[in-house]
Image (tube, rainbow, N blue to C red):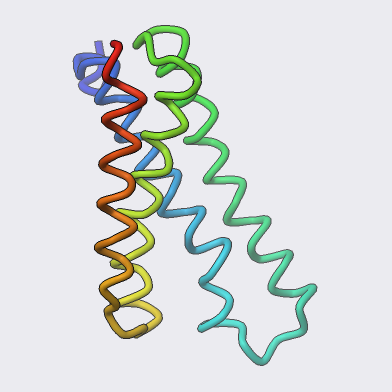
Length: 122
């Protein structure tokens, strides 16, 4: 048995989604820094290459979460959105050198509300 399989299914889902979102964020926004002077189609091809790795993690994450861990589709989507925000904010601040805005905090508080409402009946 490999070590990953000994991790609870819900945590496997979350860890795979974190990895997926890291790749997704670089695919969607990394070209703004690294390929800013390249033609858009070069950036698109590089982004598609990165997105392949995103899908290689996202598809198993959603299957494990939905089929084995017992997440509903709504719960799975909200978990993914929370992870997206948790990955995007550090990426924007540290990698793209965007200034911190309180709007990130307000968005996070809205996501906490979304988590509450989607999981309250579970």
